Each structure stands twice: as C-alpha cells, then as structure tokens.
Amino acid sequence: MSKYPAPLNALIAHLKKLPGVGTRTAERFAFELLQWKPHELIPLSDLLAELPSKIIPCQTCGCLTQEGACRFCTSTGRDTTTLCILSSPRDVYAIEETHSFRGLYHVIEHLLSPLDGRHANTLRVDRILERIAHHSIKEIIIALDSTLEGDTTALYLKQQLSHLPLSISRIAFGLPIGSTLEYTDTSTLSKAFTGRQSM
Image (cartoon, rainbow, N blue to C red):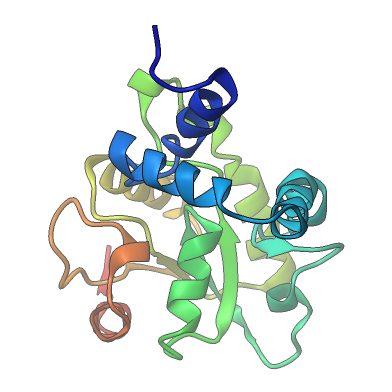
C-alpha cells in the first residue's frame, strides 16, 4: 500500500519520467506543486496540454516551430550550401549559441539502435538527399553524439552519401566518450565544431 494518495502517486510517477529525476526529486517537485495556488497551476497544466499541438517539428528540417517552416529554414542569411545533420532539435540550439555555424540544419528522428528497434530504414535518408539536391549542398557536417549509437549512425550516413560530390565531415570531439551535446558547455562545443574532421 502506497504512503501517498493516488493522485499524488500518479504525479510523482509522471515526474520521474523526466531525465535526471529520481524518486526523491520527483516527490520534492510534487509537494512543491501542492503548495501552488490554482491560478498558478492552471496555466501550467494548460501549457502542458497544448505543447503537442503548438510546438511541432518543421516539415523541412525537423527543428521546432509553432507553425509552418522554422526560423532556420526561412532565414535569408544562412549558407544554403552547408547542411548539418543532428539527432535532436535541442542540439540545434546548442550549436546556434556557439555562433560557429550559419548553414542549414537537418534533424534525423533518432540514432540507429537495432536492439531498440531503430533501424536504418527509419532514418529517412531520402529526405536528406532531397535537400542536398534542392540546395546544391557542397558540405555535410555530421554532428551526432559521441556514443556507440551516434558513431554507428554517422558511419551509416557517410556510406549512404559518399557517392555524392560533396565534402562530408564530423564535428571534432574534444568531448568525453559517451557525452551528449545538450550537456556540453558552449566553449567546448564551439571548439569541437570548428575543428571538425573529414570522414
């Protein structure tokens, strides 16, 4: 028998799904929310309910947008001959903060992981090929996490694109093996990006 009422247990269970949130932290968050006034809780609940419909992936590049094309695809000041491939919209914003890249972005839906059912046929390489042809891309920069899945996906993408007359590089990793881009400081990420290596 649980020590908390059922609605509180349900809230704690949902909070534990957030990355880095264990049982004790989830309990602390839940009890903090219990102290909030209804006029504070209702806007939060409305915002959470509206997120799936108000924040959507850009149909062109996969970055986040409220409607239509994202600001990266509609900007006239970007280098349309360079395409950076990432695995998360969050990583796009991390790279933007470095001011080291002014090209286009393309977010793939996931990294390859056959054990988790994420196979090559779901990467939609055809969408990347369409963008390369449409913009006459001259350079592809692969900016995926330095993990087993990231390395496997980077090698697969290189194989799929190697027949094209363009330069393929991967950002240099002055980063710990197993690290993810979203938790990397701006200075380190900037150096890794500008020191990218040919593949």
